[in-house]
Amino acid sequence: LTIGPAVEGGFYYDMYLGEQRLSDASFQEIEKSVQQLRQSNAPFERMVISREEALELFAHNPFKVDLIQRKVAPGTLTTAYRCGDLVDLCRGPHLPSTARVKAFKVTKNSSAYWLASADNDSLQRIYGVSFPSEKLLKAHLRRLEEAKERDHRRVGKQQGLFFFDAV
Image 1: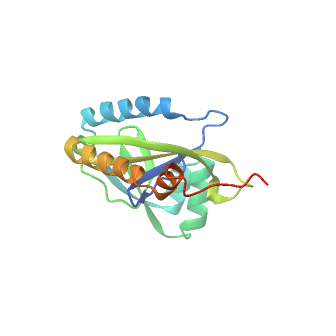
Image 2 (image 1 turned 90 degrees about the vertical axis):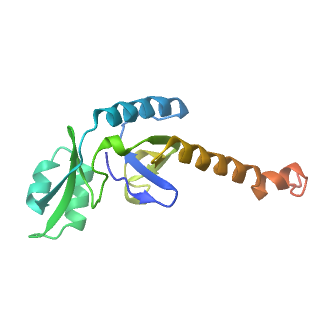
Image 3 (image 1 turned 135 degrees about the horizontal axis):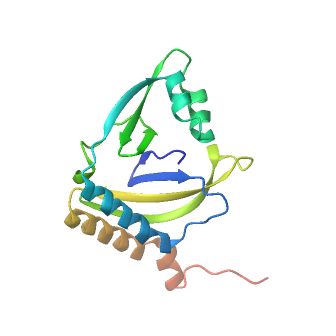
């Protein structure tokens, strides 16, 4: 795992997977894992740690080490969250436990470069959303579909408003 902030419309998480590539077929597997985690009711534990503790804790992950070295000044503190066996750098806050995640959906995936530089490692990025109920998730997904149907690029092509001359 590298970085995974909340963004407008949900969140994303970048992962280094070597040569492995995610596809739409990966979504169900990820969603199933989240469902199992939700059912475990694992608490999120906030940890306040020093820069030195963070470097030691994440020594196995060069991406986290890079983030810590760039963002956490020597002699200062940072936060991480523990959920079961997973410990990750994060400002938080988080839900009290995984049981609060009632509805979750991976919405798309893409590639990204570490720190947005083509000179760095290629990462796999997943985007997702989470809602406090299935009803709210379904309403959100319905709005996204409706917006896709009204997309000017799609509508313009259907109505023959856009064309390219083969010259």
